[in-house]
Image 1 (spheres, rainbow, N blue to C red):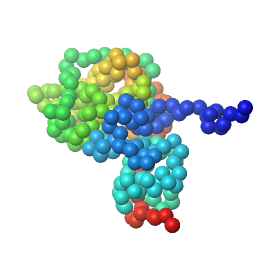
Image 2 (cartoon, rainbow, N blue to C red):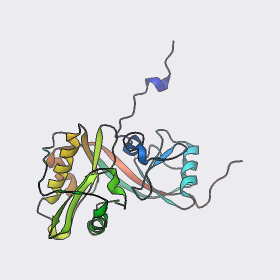
Image 3 (tube, rainbow, N blue to C red):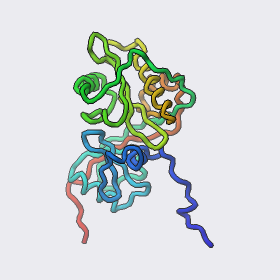
Image 4 (cartoon, helix red, strand yellow):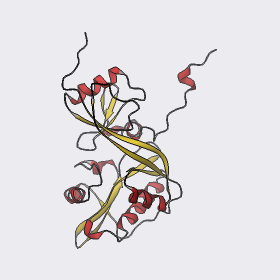
Length: 241
């Protein structure tokens, strides 16, 4: 009895397409589905998840979902868009995984929730750690450090593939850098992830060498390089004949 090629193909690793693995797993309650596509609500996080082997119909679904001339962000798309699509930006990045991080809870770190979102958004606007939207806090636990009542540093959890949790939104106000606050928060968030029996991972822009150096000094190791790709859908939608 013959075995199909598909049956012999190894199952994809959850971190090969972390957004899709998360939306099919622990974040399924947040998933919005359109044909073969999965995405988070637009006020949670902007990432779109393509299927493992996108084809012409997949890209038509993307154009249909977002509309003409729309900006779409994807992490590590498994294929390039069709020639008539505009690739607005490719941001080379790295994916790092915990390989012996000395995690530690932090007494000064406080849990952040929906009531803290205005201050979190203000800090993100100043520190620019990457996408953080009004409902991003729903993706997982967020911790912060306050000084004089003001939120000056934070870090939290974003994508949640089965068995893994991404540390994200790591940022410190410019006036409070150099005090090790980001390091303490990364270790505290990682401690919570480990306590659940999961493994922390994170992403960073490839040119953010200071952050990568910090994460590697803490015990994170490079798993792979990953591109964050921003595309613009065609100005008009193609129609079938």
